[in-house]
Length: 185
Image 1 (tube, one colour):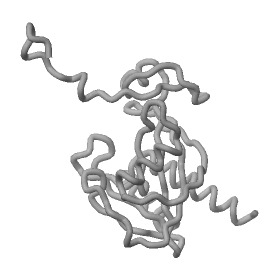
Image 2 (cartoon, helix red, strand yellow):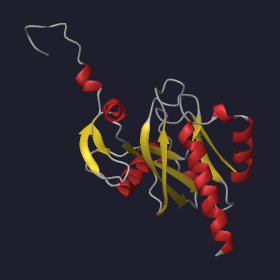
Image 3 (cartoon, helix red, strand yellow):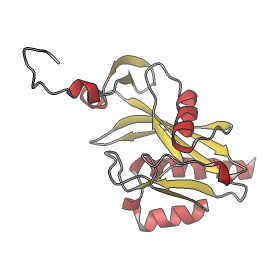
């Protein structure tokens, strides 16, 4: 704080800076999410869907107090890629932070979310967990969680789309498309 302006707000402390990228996922500069929108660039995020032995996926509900997608259902874990971080490292970090686990992950590809609030390139990672009892949820990130069959989630999402975070719609579609391809392999 500047001693000459003791009541100056500390907004700069709250702002997080990310690598801002173009549509080809090449780093252009660093900045905030707002900078990405204003410059028509993108931030990067990861979504992770975890499968159990029954083929169900872990979905989580975000706490209502969260600024982004508060009270909505979303992926098993996820978040923004930090500066100078790879998508894979971000996915592993988010899993450790939110669920305290470290399963092997497969990169299932990219999807983009562009809206008034967000300009983000997402990568979906899929993992398998064998022991559901090892999950230790960070309550500041996840208010509740459960396993459900992917097709049941898809049906509920169709009937109640606003229950689900916008990026989750695309993450689930990518996941289901990948599963369909695997059936023909």
